[in-house]
Image (cartoon, rainbow, N blue to C red; front, top):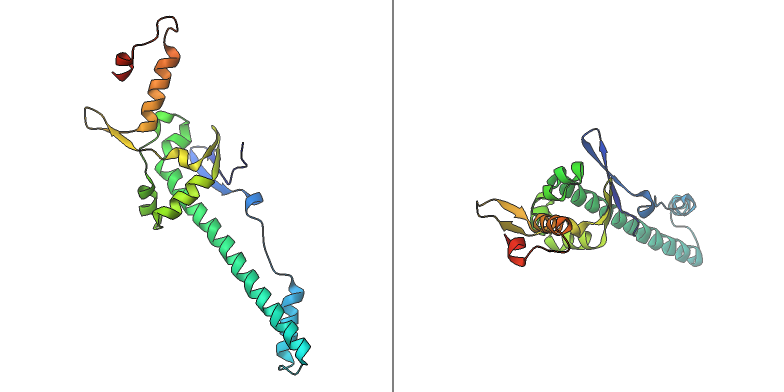
Length: 184
């Protein structure tokens, strides 16, 4: 079982979403390096070549660290916004744990809500886990195509699988339901 990236908790009928701090550590640059650059700028560059090379090296590393920290932060923001959209879209499921409450949902639905490319949504959904009061799940498990009933209502293919599973679990094992009966 994987460590969840996000958690959804039911707080008296209101869903709360939190990122797992273990997967998103606080990153920062040591203050000594910032001080080194400040000292250099205060000397107006009146240092020897070795000192100047050292300062350039430190500046390059600080810039790289800043870029890395910003990238991690952006990743967290993306994960949070994608998960928040999924949580709202599938709110009834996250409140009840009832798979028949799962609405048909495709990558484009979430992409349209958060304004990110479908490939970004796919990457997040395929690699992240959410912990709920009903278990820990891969985000992609909440995506499903829709099927249309005879009355024209759209239902999730996952809902149909759940109904079939319930029928099979309840059948008399000595006289299992015929395929035609299950199809019905």
